[in-house]
Length: 328
Image (cartoon, rainbow, N blue to C red; front, side, top):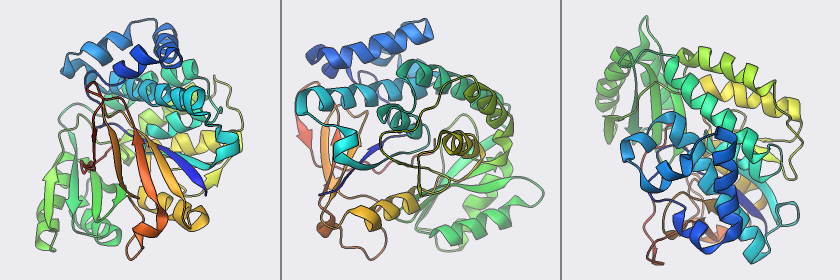
């Protein structure tokens, strides 16, 4: 059986995430301590105690989600004997989750990853004045239809397909007025639902170029190693291992489309005839669901189960799959 480990993007955060892991497992606690030391502040206190509006800030949510993901990964390694180099075929992550995947696979150190995500969060927020950009989820249209909608809505502004999340969910991003036009156009083209998202900036579009430049400079100052297992890059939807390719993909994803549907389909086609995906989640619960993103017409039951590993304060599980649009 082949395995892939996938890591969540922004929008998965919740106050209290990861605390149960740190209380129960020293290996998880060490991850939070390393992140706090790298940032020179007690981000862990914000993650565990809030307030929610502080955790929701992009500069906190991004390194916070990485910390929880890597804490869960360390628990799998120390308690379950998981070895990515031996057990995994691929790793991948949605937007900021790609940094978590790279850290899990040894391409980036945890401290460097925390600092990079703090820079990324701040740069993405700073790139566009608050209120001038927006994002919207278009439900019930395929990716090509969403690209057409974005093109029609752009006029003389920016409107791009930012996230192809799969299952008929595409997120568009750009100037606020253009995104609002896209919502109305999508409804006219038969979208089941089209809604503005409560985000603070228009991520994954050309308006983020200043943030891409900031990340190019930041990545030039850290050591990126070849990961122990290939990373399926967001913007390429194919595996890469060369450090130069990794840096290029991380810079490109700031302004480029997160090709999540294509990435999951690639992994399914390459490795998962009867395999499974392990999802490292910020959820406080352990969740099981059918392999998400398997693609139209695929037999999900033939692919095994996707396991989302998290920490539930009550030690309870649930079989509810998250359907929230993911943007970053």
